[in-house]
Image 1 (cartoon, helix red, strand yellow):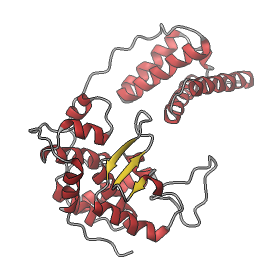
Image 2: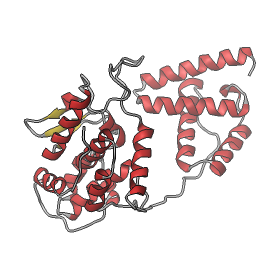
Image 3: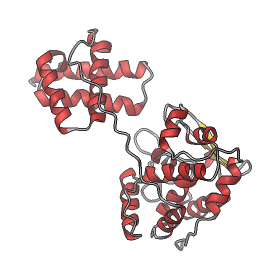
Image 4: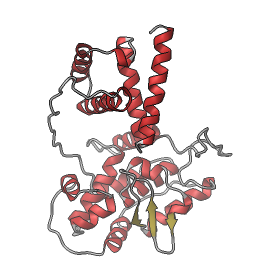
Length: 302
């Protein structure tokens, strides 16, 4: 793009950013959508308001052939929003067929494998993080962003803030997890975070929020530990949450309780996410404590 086109793109990009913010989109969605807008412009070296229908068809054909259906969907939503919010045009371009549904089953780790995985982790920060993520049924970012204030040792519960869909929830806190969190926090004593990144003194990033442990680092660590343990299943951080839910279901916790613990908006999501077993009313907090207490963990010396 020449100088004038670049200036026009910056103006359109800022207007799009403003529209997404005013419409209450999450920071993650804003980042994804604006990134998609920049990618299609870089692909053609053209300002987005100059793209033709043929160019859009060519671009989406490229995405369908070389990228995931998830990215295709995000890109279409991003461009559709841009046309509607910024250009004031109806989305009548490139009717893309609905992506095929792939209902794959995730690998589930047994409680014995979970205990072995945590025990073989050679760094205390990752060790405690894996236990916390599993025993609270958290998503990757939910665990990373936990703060001291989120842990209620009197009511033995954790306040999970701004989860998927910007929803808060409370989850039971097993005693073993509380002890592990206290042990790890004593090694770094961050004023706010349970899983800070970097080294003391902990400086705040430009946005004013403290930096947490690297997402890629924890994902890489759990894959390596799984290999060291001889676990040949496809293991990632979300496997801990998925295994937690499955273990609860297999131990008789009813589906509605699991839905609440995981923060699912729909019971259909929970039903697809776990293996179906006989449902029985149980006390979730007691069940979680009993489940976590059975883990055989050899702790790293601090």
